[in-house]
Image 1: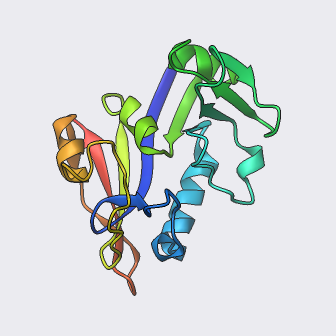
Image 2 (image 1 turned 180 degrees about the vertical axis):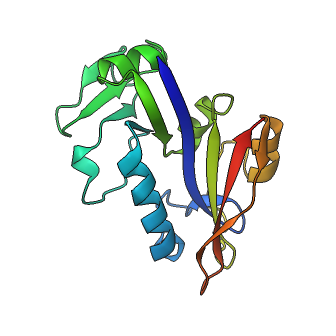
Length: 183
């Protein structure tokens, strides 16, 4: 099996991916980031996320995905979503889960939440960190389990990822995406 593992998140200026109710607010949704994210997921062979991180886009039902859950012992076909498999990481490895989902190579897009992002921290080839510098979500949910005690930059750096040149996604709101690459 040969995978390229990439993470994708947009965060507020204070490193949050959701508000205090664990919901991604509209204030964190930008057209440029949405286009970037959707395009990346359309190219991915497999999407990995927790039960609250579904991207709800027009092509979502066509995408193969693993949804992390503790409600099953290891692996199961999702009875509600087409092309989705349920995966308990305590019961089986990522490679076995990907194989169960019918994917043995290609890009894997990890889209959250915090616990899911953390699971792959030492395996990312690239982590795409989008930032909305004018949005703050006090008391919100950090993008990684160590946020807000540490910044997203500190977490990524501590796992051997280095920031590359940022790209502008939405000039009007200053939204950028920075690829953090291994090595």
